[in-house]
Every structure is written in structure tokens, then in C-alpha cells.
Figure (cartoon, rainbow, N blue to C red):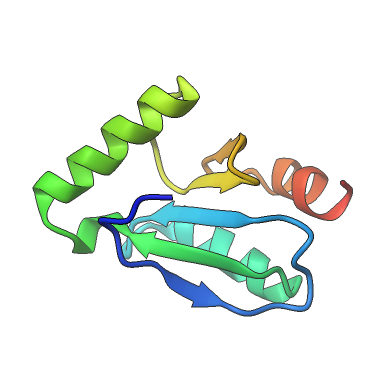
Length: 100
């Protein structure tokens, strides 16, 4: 979504959705969210925003907040460029990514 961020791509058998994850490298909820995607073979790309310069992190957070009108907390998932999942609440992720 943002050309000023370097995303890491993870291949998966399930590419029904375009999944983009903004996460923190030290966040337990973020780790569980990525593990969920991996366990279900969902293709996604991610960036650890705590590992980019502060100015870049703030720029990305401001852009996400402006685009989706949501408070940014982590993990912050963008699904198909239009929907978001904020935090890791497994039933919500399951419904959005596996049942749709």
C-alpha cells in the first residue's frame, strides 16, 4: 500500500484476499496473528513498523488512520484494500479470511 515501506511477502495456498499486516516485532498478538495466517496457508505481506525509522512509522500510522478512519493499534490488517482487522481476535480473523 505504501511505497515507502519495505514489506516481506509470505506465500500461501490461500490467496483469496489481499492481506497486508502492520505489526510490531515484539507484540504477542502480532505473533499470534501471523501464526494464524501461516497455519491456514493464507498468503500475506507484512511490515514490522517498530523496525522502521520513527518518521516512517508515524507517516504510515497517520495514513492508515486517515484512509480507514480507525485508531491504529497492532496488529493492523488491511484486507483487499478496503476492510480492516485491528488487534488479533481470532473469531473475527476466521470469519473475514476463512469464511468469506
